[in-house]
Image (cartoon, rainbow, N blue to C red; front, side, top):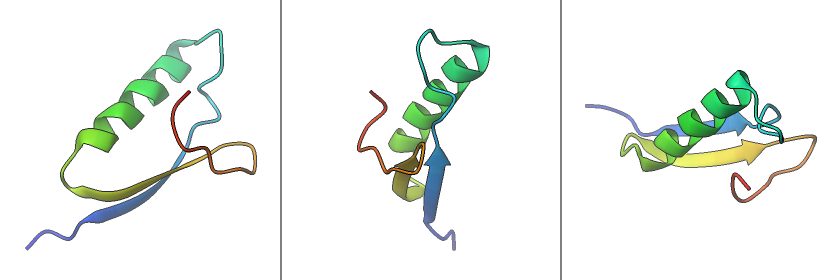
Length: 54
């Protein structure tokens, strides 16, 4: 039996202009949102909890 994952994802690297790490972080986060094994994905950046990757 697989347990659903609850993830806190730091998105500080996603800032414009996007660098390689920023692009990787953004794409990984988008894939985590679509993964059925992830029950809850919360974003964290600069001491706040943004609602989306924008």
